[in-house]
Length: 125
Image (cartoon, rainbow, N blue to C red):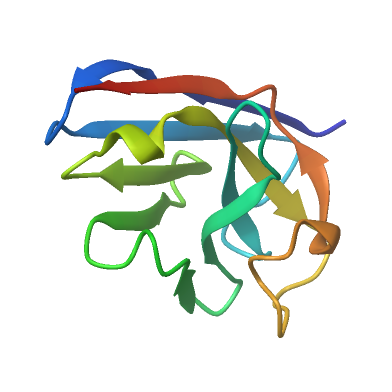
């Protein structure tokens, strides 16, 4: 059975940084497409970053230059380093795991099969 457990969320001031983690069990993070998504109240879920089984990385425009996704295959863990945080980044962040190695649309939620419970990120001005 696959479990994804996120951590690292919290409250930070504008310009601050956070590092989110997603520990996977029953699943090999290095072999498949994995992604980070976020959803703010009243807004649709948004794909933030993804890394596929070949190590190719995709970012949403809002994340480029500020966020970095990575994997530690020895720990079966996915990370999202978030810098220069803005109030617009406030959301619940969830990691997701696909059953495919890659996708032409890696930031589309429909590509993912397993989801974590999420971790809240709040950026205050």
